[in-house]
Length: 124
Image 1 (cartoon, rainbow, N blue to C red):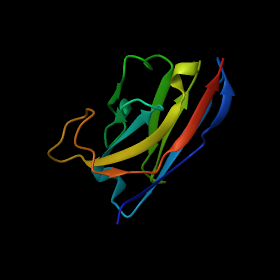
Image 2: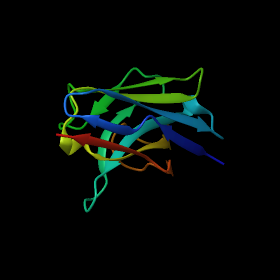
Image 3: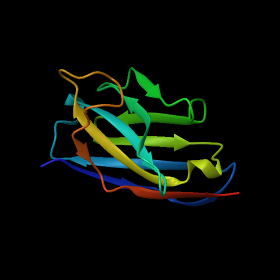
Image 4: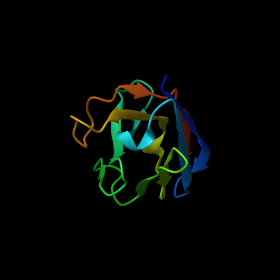
């Protein structure tokens, strides 16, 4: 059974940085493309970033490009999201997600396993 557990959320001020982590278990981690999504109150879930199985390729939403960096450590079965220059509009619940790399693309679709999420709140 795949389990994804996020950590690292919190309350910060605009311009601050925060690093989120996702710990994965119950899967062969390097068989999976990983992604980060977020959902703000009253809004639909939106894609934030994705990373290929070996970390060689990444994809970002335009809203976070240049400020957020996604990375993974296959030896530790973990993925991270370094968030810099945070803005109040980044406030959301951030969730990590996984999909098998075989037969899927590096994009924002077809994720099959999800974590519960961690709250990020950015004050102005």
